[in-house]
Length: 306
Image 1 (spheres, one colour):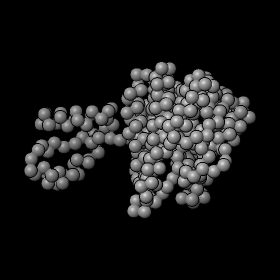
Image 2 (tube, rainbow, N blue to C red; image 1 turned 45 degrees about the vertical axis):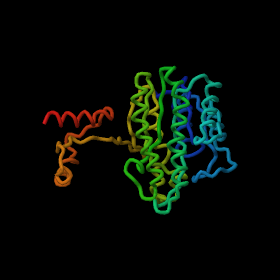
Image 3 (cartoon, helix red, strand yellow; image 1 turned 90 degrees about the vertical axis):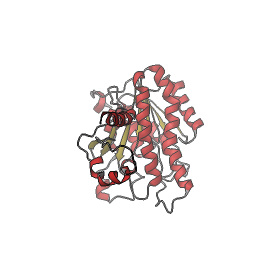
Image 4 (cartoon, one colour; image 1 turned 30 degrees about the vertical axis):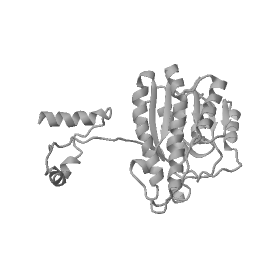
């Protein structure tokens, strides 16, 4: 662990929970948090990419790696889509270490199909794991973090949600929903020093193994994404950020509001809006709203100040 002992980005005394941490991104996240001083609860159901459960115990393997390097870790095998299992996971951390400082909602599965071929079961399962799994985890730690006056929550969103991707209507919907959840929890947690962010990773894991050529996969290591998670989970973390990370490249995504155009009310407004559409979507002067109220405030200001 000597390579990171001199690092200024440390997590000594912090307790972190990482879901879906038996492999890929979650494993990388858990190992790095532990290497930088955190006590880590490693959650993994041992499920295949589509969510089917095998007899493997990858969480135990990651815990063994952490302990072999001198760190402290516990394994928890349970589905994030089961609220009772999630509560048991948080209880395990609290019973062992007495606090939870960081929650990295990383667990996920895929059921990719075009919307025409996708069953409602496929859609619901993805929402249950990605969205509701993150909701259950965040709810289970929320009051703990508020009482501590400290908490860092990282949601794993995706470019598929932010920008769309063919064959991933279920996944994209769940991932964009996490952005909405993050926006509100960041506002509600602000006065309690609970900071909430989203990480949009691109990484070569079993989730992406058959959708990218080998030369690209070689660049997209989970380890190249984890620095982004570390910053979002750190003591001086931002809040309400959407960080894109892959192949060592980091960028930010923003949901913005354009200046807008007052057209009033009346029978011809739809036709006028259609004619002046390019003005409505013009990006000059757009902003990142501090909350959803900004939209209504802008609308009323324009309507009353015309």
